[in-house]
Length: 141
Image (cartoon, rainbow, N blue to C red; front, side):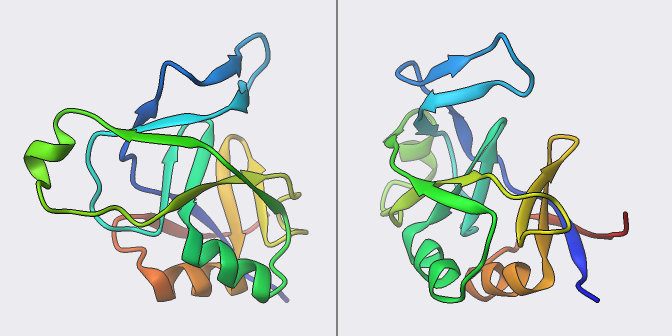
């Protein structure tokens, strides 16, 4: 039997002014994403409701391991105050938008009640790449 986990990743910033969002539905549907980093503690997975970002390196590993329940989309990224003041020499890894489209408990990635649900297999890949500031809770349905 597969194990599943609820993840609450680090929030490292906010949606930017160039994001296109349909707020007439809940959760809001993001059509175009601009993410503005305000800080970053180093995790490979971050969130800003209603979207999640992962490093490009992790996206490749998820794909290579046939992880299900997501697609990768491009986005605009920029940094804003206080990022440069907090991390003047930090070079961010390349992040991509991981659009979660799977069904919780059936796919490796899914959303249930606006929370990210992952399989044990997907979680292990994320943890290998750094998931130190993410709240993780084993769940049962």
